[in-house]
Amino acid sequence: MIIFWIALLSGSLLFGVYHLMVSKRRYNWSKKWQRASSITAMDEKPAFGVTADPQRKWGTWIPHPFVTPVPAPYPNWSVAHTKPLPYRPFKHNYFVTMGIRSMSWDDWIELDNEWPEFHARKMNRIQERADKLNHTEPCAVPAVEELVDELSRYLTCRYPSLFKFTSPGIMSNLYTGEVFDLRSRPWKEDPMTMCGKWLQDDLAVMIEGEDGQYYLKAGSIMLSGFWRLTDKLNMSLAEIHTSGDVPHFNAKLKTGMERFFQKLGPERAVNRNNYFIQTDNDLAWSHAIGHEDSDTIGWYTAEDAVGVDQLKFRSERQSLRRLPKTGAIIFTIRTYFLPITQIAQEPYCSARLLDGIRHWDKDVSSYKGLQKYGPVLVPYLEAMAKKDEERGNGRDSEKENYPW
Ligand code: HEM
Image 1: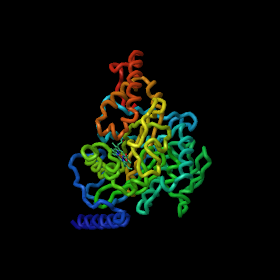
Image 2: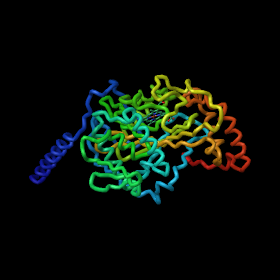
Image 3: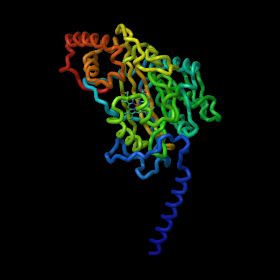
Image 4: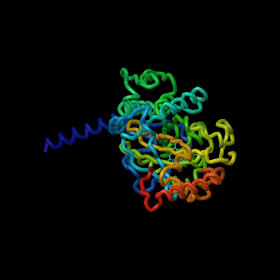
């Protein structure tokens, strides 16, 4: 009996000490940056990757013991020869859904032989307007520090021929010769600018407020095409989407997305892909919808497309994951950008894209600017689809293999 009481007492003591230590490490984000005040009711349906502590108070995060798995080196990767992955994420129909799928840790960041071109464009954007493209709010500093740590560990293992730790805390880019000091403070540049220089992706850091909403608190948004960091910074997920008139956001996406963000645990990660048509050829900013500094940007300002050669297929491969120590959610956006005439040469693509576009409803069509290029694109895809079918690539022989 005595042994039982001793064991019970020492167990409680250990438990108490553990909780004291953990609560000291608990991050409590400042109230200052919170914009919305309402508390969103939790939906009872299970979310994807439900692992975050359901009891936790919004806006607080207890560091999670999860350690991101070390990725395997990308097989035979080379900055000169590895081609971009050929995502063709259009279906014969079109529904507004979250469209997320599980991601393997190895695939967090995808780099290829377009890296030098993306990097050059980003460097030139940094020269022109770094402050408008990259930013870290003070409350996001711990999350961004963790992001720097996670990204540098990932990149040096996944792409060892491009990134290397040349001494402790110093990461070098073996292609450009850039050297990044990850330890000394103050930072030489905004750490989001630094992360942006490493990747082809844009990056957004989302932090939970005390109302359970997620706010855009840091970003490196240099190649986004149609939206600007300065417009969306500090907005909640819902404001980001409603201010851009994302079609059917309130009816079809809001509840599921908010539940997903609240429940996403650090050991799960997801991808989603989307696609757009652009009527000019700048990856960084689509001038067709207005000057980047203009107050009035939108498809309504664009000229009608005159020929199919000016049409680009623009497609994002996005990833979402939660950082274990700070609980911030990292959103990566990698854009693939190629002429529509190239896509239309590929088996099955013309008919599938055409069917997808024909399923866009009025709101989706207007959001994606169909009125400006539809009269050129639709007859072109019809003709190309017919040719493809004549070559034996009809619908009955097509394999379903989303997102390829
Ligand atoms: C599960 C997560 C998410 C889903 C399902 C989602 C869904 C969408 C959809 C459907 C669109 C319309 C274009 C498209 O088809 O992709 C969109 C646009 C957009 N999303 Fe998200 N999104 C998610 C997360 C985020 C996050 C974390 C950010 C943070 C920056 C973000 C920022 C934007 C922006 C800036 C736009 C363009 C809005 C505009 O046109 O002004 N999204 N999103």
